[in-house]
Image (cartoon, rainbow, N blue to C red; front, side, top):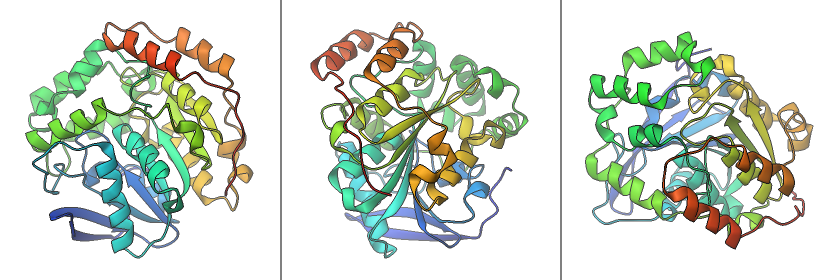
Length: 327
């Protein structure tokens, strides 16, 4: 499946004095999607056909797409507050939440500061922030520039630097997506910079063990931007989480149905109880020993923060999982 098929209701909400663009797709239990760095609502198109059983809610983060950017720096807690206010405006007390890349960090923050708003979590190709295993220096440099959203030449150069995972290099769906090179409105320079600044100050390791929501962590084995070891860190520190690895896929596995990630997400959120979901039962519990092994085996990165991040993990060591609760 590919492309957006559900009817879209577009709204502009006044949140903290700024206009925020929101898309609502379909009907059913609410499912909130939180996107990655610089990405707007249009980029969820390839995933939407998997989610026809839900009312899917997406929004442009401040400074991204058609949402206005703040003037002052903010933390990811601010974007989490925006997500809460979007749910308020649509009349939802709670929702299932999927966070992708930077949006996965926002989803973690939302689950921490407003746990009653979140039923289940899916964290895709994302990280704990400080304490994470850094990706390839070239790949990180490529995604740190907003030029990829404004120039077709820059976008193609960026994707070459990222060096896609094997399955993504062979993906017809991803090639078609790349040929189009951009979807919807590009982020402003200020909005993009503020997002990166907010992410640079994020660290969930100290409080991840308090987030008890059922959480499915999805990682691609060939992700050069946010290596698979980061999924193991999240699944290890979260008390009620499991890790699902997609062999041969990387950071863009949500863009192709062939990866199976879309089916796993829909099945996880659609089950009456999370532990009845095959997406959950087929995923792995990550022990401290397994997490340490995946961190050690992660590809070496020239990114200098790998050393300070290792110190952060030492400062907040992973303890034995306590187990979680919830549906």
